[in-house]
Image 1 (cartoon, one colour):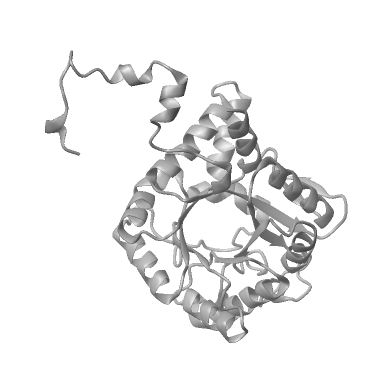
Image 2: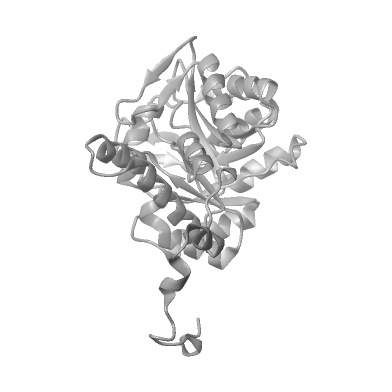
Length: 335
């Protein structure tokens, strides 16, 4: 910005352009639209089941009939897409529920594509919800060390992604943070004829304290240790850019920064430096903090939610994944 071309007070008065609502809307630099929102949903077996998530007011684990109802309400409010997570009935050391043809996510995809064909279906590809130990990869225990095995995990991730595509998923979203997973998934999808199925990579996913409520929702807390050997250190910016570059080279069509609000600087750099379609995940901790503050009367939930989502847009997000998607779409329509 060339500040030398600007006038000075009293000739230049920025408030002249803030006097009227219509004028403020006309010159608004950043706009938030329901078209940019994605609603995460948690599917589990059962019927007429809406199991509340204590740490996330208004969010539920949903049986398929209730999931369809929730997705329909979101779509009718103007939300064009959902992101599906699954809670299996049984977990094991091979995450077999993640790639089972009749797995809970696969069932949810088929139901939604049948009943809401215009709704965009994104599926999260990870193993943590399906592993008995809660980690995102195959675990190897030795006498002195426990490791998450990278390369053997890639085969299971690729198999899971393929099963989602076969069920009818529109977009595959790997969130595991194993090295090389985008290449493995892209290769498998192409081999099976799903070369037109795009990949939205959780490219810069940080080991964040903001994920706490999600782990209750997805029943995915690790049973030992933590995820810092595969998710990124919160202080690293350049590493995030390298991760994004690698995923793009391996075939990612869209990239994601997670979490969003505490990582707006990363989001801005990713969008500026790569120019790829970029998603921001407004994670569970961000959602729950606003809900808790609003419940205590400390903030206006609607105003704070929309302002935080607008900040993500301003930083460079083309797509925003948020648990407030349905409410936000309705608020935007009213506005």
